[in-house]
Image 1 (cartoon, rainbow, N blue to C red):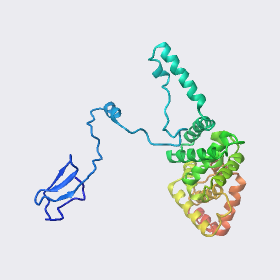
Image 2: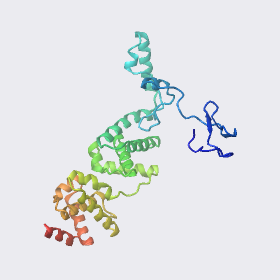
Image 3: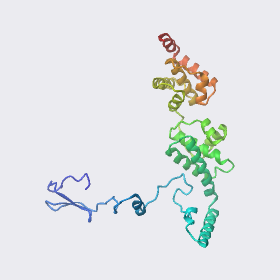
Image 4: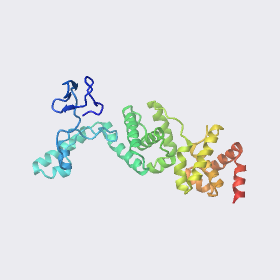
Length: 306
Protein backbone atom coordinates (compact mmCIF):
# COMPACT_ATOMS: atom_id res chain seq x y z
CA UNK A 1 0.00 0.00 0.00
CA UNK A 2 1.20 3.52 -0.69
CA UNK A 3 3.15 4.93 2.26
CA UNK A 4 1.35 8.27 2.15
CA UNK A 5 -2.12 6.62 2.74
CA UNK A 6 -2.21 6.45 6.54
CA UNK A 7 -5.87 6.92 7.46
CA UNK A 8 -9.28 7.49 5.91
CA UNK A 9 -9.92 11.20 5.17
CA UNK A 10 -13.70 10.69 5.77
CA UNK A 11 -13.89 8.88 9.11
CA UNK A 12 -10.27 8.98 10.21
CA UNK A 13 -10.14 5.21 10.46
CA UNK A 14 -6.95 3.29 9.88
CA UNK A 15 -8.62 0.00 8.90
CA UNK A 16 -7.72 0.25 5.19
CA UNK A 17 -7.76 -2.55 2.62
CA UNK A 18 -5.66 -2.58 -0.55
CA UNK A 19 -7.34 -4.45 -3.39
CA UNK A 20 -4.42 -5.31 -5.68
CA UNK A 21 -6.61 -6.65 -8.50
CA UNK A 22 -8.63 -3.42 -8.83
CA UNK A 23 -5.84 -1.08 -7.77
CA UNK A 24 -7.93 0.48 -5.00
CA UNK A 25 -7.52 1.34 -1.33
CA UNK A 26 -10.83 1.06 0.55
CA UNK A 27 -11.74 2.02 4.11
CA UNK A 28 -13.35 -0.98 5.80
CA UNK A 29 -15.11 1.21 8.35
CA UNK A 30 -17.05 3.59 6.09
CA UNK A 31 -16.49 2.05 2.62
CA UNK A 32 -14.82 5.13 1.12
CA UNK A 33 -12.54 4.46 -1.83
CA UNK A 34 -9.45 6.33 -0.63
CA UNK A 35 -7.31 5.65 -3.72
CA UNK A 36 -8.18 4.27 -7.15
CA UNK A 37 -6.42 3.51 -10.41
CA UNK A 38 -3.24 2.68 -8.51
CA UNK A 39 -0.33 1.35 -10.56
CA UNK A 40 1.60 -1.71 -9.49
CA UNK A 41 5.22 -1.14 -10.48
CA UNK A 42 6.32 -4.62 -9.43
CA UNK A 43 6.98 -7.47 -11.82
CA UNK A 44 4.09 -9.82 -12.47
CA UNK A 45 6.13 -13.01 -12.34
CA UNK A 46 8.03 -14.90 -9.70
CA UNK A 47 11.75 -15.24 -10.25
CA UNK A 48 13.41 -18.43 -9.02
CA UNK A 49 16.73 -18.01 -10.81
CA UNK A 50 18.58 -15.40 -12.87
CA UNK A 51 17.84 -17.18 -16.17
CA UNK A 52 14.10 -17.18 -15.53
CA UNK A 53 14.15 -13.46 -14.79
CA UNK A 54 16.22 -12.65 -17.88
CA UNK A 55 13.87 -14.54 -20.19
CA UNK A 56 10.80 -12.64 -18.92
CA UNK A 57 12.20 -9.11 -18.95
CA UNK A 58 10.69 -6.88 -21.62
CA UNK A 59 13.26 -4.10 -21.61
CA UNK A 60 16.85 -4.21 -22.81
CA UNK A 61 19.89 -2.23 -21.77
CA UNK A 62 19.55 1.59 -21.60
CA UNK A 63 20.55 3.79 -24.54
CA UNK A 64 24.23 4.67 -24.67
CA UNK A 65 26.34 6.81 -26.97
CA UNK A 66 29.30 4.45 -26.49
CA UNK A 67 27.76 2.20 -29.17
CA UNK A 68 27.44 3.34 -32.77
CA UNK A 69 23.68 2.61 -32.84
CA UNK A 70 23.16 3.79 -29.22
CA UNK A 71 22.45 0.17 -28.25
CA UNK A 72 19.13 0.08 -30.14
CA UNK A 73 20.18 -1.85 -33.25
CA UNK A 74 20.12 -5.56 -33.92
CA UNK A 75 22.70 -7.76 -35.59
CA UNK A 76 22.67 -11.10 -37.32
CA UNK A 77 23.97 -13.69 -34.84
CA UNK A 78 27.68 -14.16 -34.24
CA UNK A 79 29.85 -17.16 -35.09
CA UNK A 80 28.89 -18.98 -31.89
CA UNK A 81 25.17 -18.71 -32.74
CA UNK A 82 25.58 -19.58 -36.42
CA UNK A 83 27.71 -22.59 -35.60
CA UNK A 84 24.60 -24.48 -34.52
CA UNK A 85 23.01 -24.21 -37.98
CA UNK A 86 23.39 -26.62 -40.89
CA UNK A 87 25.65 -25.81 -43.86
CA UNK A 88 23.17 -24.04 -46.19
CA UNK A 89 21.52 -22.05 -43.40
CA UNK A 90 24.88 -21.06 -41.98
CA UNK A 91 26.13 -19.77 -45.34
CA UNK A 92 22.89 -17.84 -45.81
CA UNK A 93 23.28 -16.04 -42.47
CA UNK A 94 26.98 -15.37 -43.08
CA UNK A 95 25.97 -13.61 -46.32
CA UNK A 96 23.33 -11.63 -44.40
CA UNK A 97 25.95 -10.51 -41.88
CA UNK A 98 28.25 -9.41 -44.68
CA UNK A 99 25.48 -7.38 -46.35
CA UNK A 100 24.44 -5.87 -43.04
CA UNK A 101 27.96 -4.48 -42.68
CA UNK A 102 28.09 -3.28 -46.30
CA UNK A 103 24.74 -1.49 -46.15
CA UNK A 104 25.71 0.48 -43.03
CA UNK A 105 26.35 4.19 -43.62
CA UNK A 106 29.75 5.90 -43.58
CA UNK A 107 28.87 7.55 -40.25
CA UNK A 108 28.08 4.19 -38.66
CA UNK A 109 31.35 2.68 -39.90
CA UNK A 110 33.27 5.69 -38.58
CA UNK A 111 31.54 5.44 -35.20
CA UNK A 112 32.32 1.72 -34.91
CA UNK A 113 36.05 2.35 -35.23
CA UNK A 114 36.14 5.63 -33.29
CA UNK A 115 34.13 4.43 -30.29
CA UNK A 116 36.38 1.37 -29.96
CA UNK A 117 39.40 3.72 -29.84
CA UNK A 118 37.56 5.97 -27.38
CA UNK A 119 36.94 3.05 -25.02
CA UNK A 120 40.59 2.03 -25.24
CA UNK A 121 41.89 5.51 -24.34
CA UNK A 122 39.28 5.95 -21.58
CA UNK A 123 40.30 2.59 -20.09
CA UNK A 124 44.00 3.53 -20.27
CA UNK A 125 43.33 6.81 -18.43
CA UNK A 126 40.95 5.11 -15.95
CA UNK A 127 38.15 7.56 -16.72
CA UNK A 128 34.71 7.13 -15.10
CA UNK A 129 31.73 5.88 -17.08
CA UNK A 130 30.09 9.33 -17.09
CA UNK A 131 33.10 10.87 -18.87
CA UNK A 132 33.20 8.05 -21.43
CA UNK A 133 29.49 8.53 -22.17
CA UNK A 134 29.84 12.32 -22.51
CA UNK A 135 32.87 12.06 -24.79
CA UNK A 136 31.05 9.53 -27.01
CA UNK A 137 28.11 11.95 -27.26
CA UNK A 138 30.43 14.82 -28.25
CA UNK A 139 32.17 12.67 -30.88
CA UNK A 140 28.81 11.51 -32.31
CA UNK A 141 27.68 15.13 -32.64
CA UNK A 142 30.99 16.03 -34.30
CA UNK A 143 30.60 13.23 -36.87
CA UNK A 144 26.99 14.20 -37.62
CA UNK A 145 28.09 17.83 -38.20
CA UNK A 146 30.92 16.72 -40.51
CA UNK A 147 33.65 18.06 -38.20
CA UNK A 148 35.78 14.91 -38.51
CA UNK A 149 36.34 15.38 -42.23
CA UNK A 150 39.93 16.46 -42.87
CA UNK A 151 41.10 15.46 -39.37
CA UNK A 152 42.38 12.22 -37.99
CA UNK A 153 39.83 10.14 -36.12
CA UNK A 154 42.20 9.72 -33.15
CA UNK A 155 42.70 13.47 -32.68
CA UNK A 156 38.93 14.13 -32.62
CA UNK A 157 38.46 11.25 -30.15
CA UNK A 158 41.16 12.73 -27.89
CA UNK A 159 39.66 16.21 -28.20
CA UNK A 160 36.21 14.87 -27.24
CA UNK A 161 37.68 13.02 -24.26
CA UNK A 162 39.52 16.13 -23.07
CA UNK A 163 36.32 18.20 -23.40
CA UNK A 164 34.35 15.61 -21.40
CA UNK A 165 37.05 15.57 -18.69
CA UNK A 166 36.86 19.35 -18.43
CA UNK A 167 33.06 19.33 -18.26
CA UNK A 168 33.00 16.69 -15.50
CA UNK A 169 35.95 18.25 -13.64
CA UNK A 170 38.04 15.09 -13.98
CA UNK A 171 41.67 16.31 -14.03
CA UNK A 172 43.54 14.94 -17.04
CA UNK A 173 46.27 16.88 -18.83
CA UNK A 174 46.89 17.13 -22.56
CA UNK A 175 50.19 15.32 -21.99
CA UNK A 176 48.35 12.32 -20.53
CA UNK A 177 45.93 12.23 -23.45
CA UNK A 178 48.82 12.54 -25.87
CA UNK A 179 50.59 9.59 -24.24
CA UNK A 180 47.43 7.46 -24.28
CA UNK A 181 46.39 8.22 -27.87
CA UNK A 182 49.75 8.73 -29.57
CA UNK A 183 48.65 12.12 -30.95
CA UNK A 184 50.71 15.27 -30.46
CA UNK A 185 49.65 17.53 -27.62
CA UNK A 186 49.26 20.58 -29.88
CA UNK A 187 47.02 18.67 -32.29
CA UNK A 188 44.73 17.51 -29.46
CA UNK A 189 44.46 21.07 -28.11
CA UNK A 190 43.73 22.46 -31.57
CA UNK A 191 41.02 19.84 -32.26
CA UNK A 192 39.52 20.31 -28.79
CA UNK A 193 39.14 24.07 -29.32
CA UNK A 194 37.68 23.55 -32.80
CA UNK A 195 35.11 20.94 -31.71
CA UNK A 196 33.94 22.87 -28.63
CA UNK A 197 33.63 26.08 -30.66
CA UNK A 198 31.67 24.48 -33.51
CA UNK A 199 29.34 22.53 -31.21
CA UNK A 200 28.81 25.49 -28.86
CA UNK A 201 30.05 23.60 -25.80
CA UNK A 202 30.79 26.01 -22.94
CA UNK A 203 33.59 24.87 -20.64
CA UNK A 204 34.77 26.72 -17.56
CA UNK A 205 38.51 27.15 -16.89
CA UNK A 206 40.15 24.30 -15.00
CA UNK A 207 40.49 24.67 -11.26
CA UNK A 208 44.13 24.08 -10.19
CA UNK A 209 42.90 22.46 -6.95
CA UNK A 210 41.43 19.55 -8.98
CA UNK A 211 44.98 18.40 -9.84
CA UNK A 212 46.32 18.46 -6.28
CA UNK A 213 45.14 14.97 -5.11
CA UNK A 214 46.64 13.20 -8.16
CA UNK A 215 49.94 15.05 -8.02
CA UNK A 216 50.23 14.59 -4.24
CA UNK A 217 49.53 10.87 -4.56
CA UNK A 218 52.17 10.46 -7.29
CA UNK A 219 54.74 12.36 -5.17
CA UNK A 220 53.74 10.40 -2.01
CA UNK A 221 53.06 13.55 0.02
CA UNK A 222 51.17 13.61 3.32
CA UNK A 223 47.54 14.77 3.69
CA UNK A 224 48.77 17.83 5.64
CA UNK A 225 50.92 18.88 2.69
CA UNK A 226 48.00 18.36 0.34
CA UNK A 227 45.66 20.48 2.50
CA UNK A 228 48.24 23.26 2.80
CA UNK A 229 48.73 23.35 -0.97
CA UNK A 230 44.96 23.84 -1.48
CA UNK A 231 45.06 26.66 1.08
CA UNK A 232 47.95 28.28 -0.86
CA UNK A 233 45.94 27.98 -4.08
CA UNK A 234 42.94 29.69 -2.47
CA UNK A 235 45.17 32.57 -1.37
CA UNK A 236 46.66 32.72 -4.87
CA UNK A 237 43.19 32.93 -6.44
CA UNK A 238 42.27 35.84 -4.16
CA UNK A 239 45.51 37.58 -5.18
CA UNK A 240 44.61 36.89 -8.87
CA UNK A 241 47.75 34.83 -9.43
CA UNK A 242 45.94 31.97 -11.16
CA UNK A 243 44.35 33.94 -14.01
CA UNK A 244 46.20 33.59 -17.31
CA UNK A 245 48.42 30.79 -16.04
CA UNK A 246 48.28 27.06 -16.68
CA UNK A 247 46.39 25.23 -13.90
CA UNK A 248 48.87 22.34 -13.78
CA UNK A 249 51.85 24.68 -13.33
CA UNK A 250 50.31 26.69 -10.50
CA UNK A 251 49.05 23.50 -8.79
CA UNK A 252 52.51 21.91 -9.00
CA UNK A 253 54.17 25.05 -7.61
CA UNK A 254 51.71 25.18 -4.69
CA UNK A 255 52.51 21.53 -3.89
CA UNK A 256 56.24 22.25 -4.11
CA UNK A 257 55.92 25.15 -1.62
CA UNK A 258 53.70 23.12 0.69
CA UNK A 259 56.20 20.22 0.66
CA UNK A 260 58.99 22.64 1.68
CA UNK A 261 56.85 23.98 4.54
CA UNK A 262 56.23 20.46 5.87
CA UNK A 263 59.78 19.23 5.42
CA UNK A 264 58.87 16.80 2.64
CA UNK A 265 61.42 18.00 0.14
CA UNK A 266 60.86 17.12 -3.48
CA UNK A 267 63.03 18.39 -6.30
CA UNK A 268 61.61 20.68 -8.95
CA UNK A 269 62.43 18.01 -11.50
CA UNK A 270 60.28 15.42 -9.66
CA UNK A 271 57.33 17.80 -9.36
CA UNK A 272 57.66 18.91 -13.00
CA UNK A 273 57.68 15.29 -14.26
CA UNK A 274 54.50 14.44 -12.34
CA UNK A 275 52.69 17.61 -13.46
CA UNK A 276 53.85 17.38 -17.07
CA UNK A 277 55.36 20.89 -17.09
CA UNK A 278 58.94 22.21 -17.30
CA UNK A 279 61.17 23.09 -14.35
CA UNK A 280 61.21 26.69 -15.58
CA UNK A 281 57.43 26.86 -15.14
CA UNK A 282 57.71 25.49 -11.59
CA UNK A 283 60.43 28.06 -10.75
CA UNK A 284 58.45 30.99 -12.19
CA UNK A 285 55.21 30.05 -10.39
CA UNK A 286 57.18 29.33 -7.21
CA UNK A 287 58.78 32.79 -7.23
CA UNK A 288 55.42 34.44 -7.85
CA UNK A 289 53.86 32.61 -4.91
CA UNK A 290 56.72 33.59 -2.60
CA UNK A 291 56.69 37.24 -3.62
CA UNK A 292 52.94 37.87 -3.68
CA UNK A 293 51.85 35.70 -0.74
CA UNK A 294 54.85 36.40 1.57
CA UNK A 295 55.60 32.70 1.95
CA UNK A 296 59.35 33.18 2.52
CA UNK A 297 58.76 33.93 6.21
CA UNK A 298 56.74 30.73 6.64
CA UNK A 299 59.47 28.68 4.96
CA UNK A 300 62.16 30.21 7.24
CA UNK A 301 60.06 29.48 10.33
CA UNK A 302 59.54 25.86 9.27
CA UNK A 303 63.30 25.44 8.78
CA UNK A 304 64.05 26.90 12.23
CA UNK A 305 61.60 24.49 13.90
CA UNK A 306 63.55 21.58 12.43
